[in-house]
Image 1 (cartoon, rainbow, N blue to C red):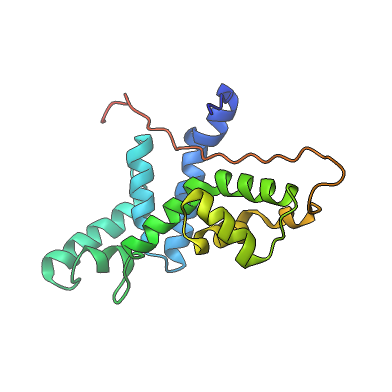
Image 2: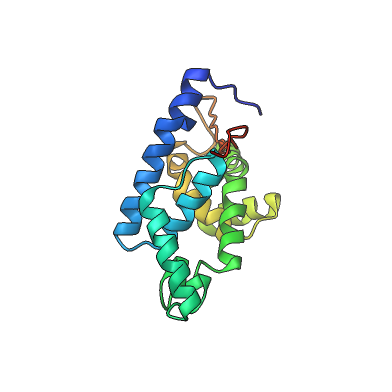
Length: 181
C-alpha cells in the first residue's frame, strides 16, 4: 500500500524543525544516561544531511581521545557505556519481525474472532501462528501491543459489523543533494 503525504505534512514530519526536535530528544536521552542516543543522533544527521550538533560533536571528540588512549575499551563501550551492549542480534531480528507482521496478525485475529473464535491463548494464538508461520510468542506480543480491542468484538460477530484495522510503517526518508559545506 502506498501512502501519499502532503508536502506540508512531510515538512512537519521530516523537515528541518522536525530533525532539530529529534536531535534535541537524542540530546535529552544522552544526558539522561542513554549512550545509544549518540548513535541515533549520528544516524539522523546522516539521513537528513544535518550538521552534527555541538553536544554530539563534543562527545565524539572526547570518545576519539578515549579510544586512542585506551581509556575506552571499544566502540561498544563508547556508544553503550561500560558493561552495556546493544540488544542482541536475535532480539533485534525478532523486533523487526514483529513490526513487519502487525497488520497481518491483527487481521487474522480479527477474522478469527469474527468467525466465532475464542481469544483463549492456546486456541487463537496457536491458530494465527500456524497461518502466519510466526512463532506463537510473536503473535502474543503483537496482540499485547496492538490488539487489545479485538476482545471487544463479540465472538461470531452476531451484529454483522464490518471490522477493519490499518497498520503502516513510515520509513524515514533519506535527504540528499545538500552541499557538504
